Image 1 (tube, rainbow, N blue to C red):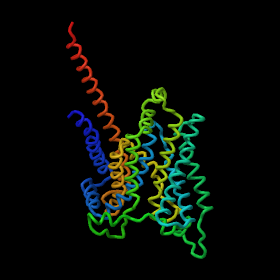
Image 2 (cartoon, rainbow, N blue to C red; image 1 turned 45 degrees about the horizontal axis):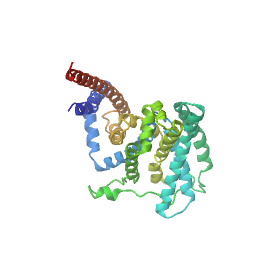
Image 3 (cartoon, one colour; image 1 turned 90 degrees about the vertical axis):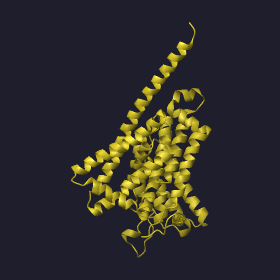
Image 4 (cartoon, one colour; image 1 turned 120 degrees about the horizontal axis):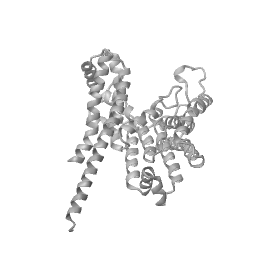
Length: 372
C-alpha cells in the first residue's frame, strides 16, 4: 500500500499543482479558467481532434524515446533536433530519387533516416570517447551546424526543378512517389469509432512509434545490452569493474538515440512527400520535456506525449474561441513540467525517508532477536 501511495502521489500531486497554477495564470491574464478548460475539453471530445492529438503525439513520443535512451546512460543528447532534421532531409532526397515496390521503398526511406540520425549523433559520441568533449556542448553545436549550415546548404542544392510552376508551396526536395509514402490508418481507427471527417488522416507512423516504444522497453529491460547500458548510467565505475566497456556503451547509446531521432521527421515526410522549405521545428527539444515528464518510462512517455499534444492542439481552439491566448497552452506545458519535477522530487524524498525508517526498524528487530 505504501509503494502504491508513493507511486501515485507524484503524478496526482503534479496534476493538482498544474490545475491550481494554470488557473491562477489564466486569471492573471484576464481569462476565465472555467471557459478555457471547457473549450479545451469540449474540443478534445471530437474524433477529428483526437486524430490531430495522436498525429502530434507521435513525433513527440519518438523524440522522447531518443532523448530517454541517452538519459538512461546518463548522457544528455540535446542534439535530437539537428539529428532528426538532417535525417528528414537526406531521407526525403533519397526517397525522391528512387522508385521501388511500396514496402521496400518505405523501408529504404526509414532505414536511411535512422542511419543518418545515428551517424550524426555518433559524432558527439566519438568526440566524447576520444577527446572527452561533453555531449551537451557538442550536441548543441551540432544542432547549429545542422540547422544553420548543412540543412540550409543541402536543401538549396537539392531543391527540385520547378520549371514554370515556381511557387512558394512547391519548394522543397523532389516529391516522393506514392509508393514511398506510408499509408494512413484511418480504416483501423474507424473499425472502433466512426468515419473520420474534415479530411483528417491518422498517420501510419503511430504504429511505428508503438513498435519503437515496445522495442525500447525490451532492449533496456530484457537484454544484456540494456542491462549494461542502465548499469553504466547508474554507476559507470562499477560497470567498468564488471567488464562493461564504457566507451563502446557511450557510442552505442548515442547512435541508438540518433537512430530513434531519425524517425521523428518521417511523420511529416510521409504526410508532405518531401522536405519542405519550412519543416516543423522544435520537436527535438519538446521530446526532452516529454521524456523528463514521463520519467524515461515507455508507458509514462505515452501519457506525457498525449498531454503535450493535447495542449498543443488546444492552443488553436483557445485562440479561435477567444477564451484565452494560445500562448497559455505553452505556459501550461512549462507548468506541467515544473510541477512534475517538484512533485517527483518531494515524493522521492518521502520514499527514501520511509525506506530508511523501515530498514532501521528491521535492523533493530534483528538485533533484538539475537540472544545475548
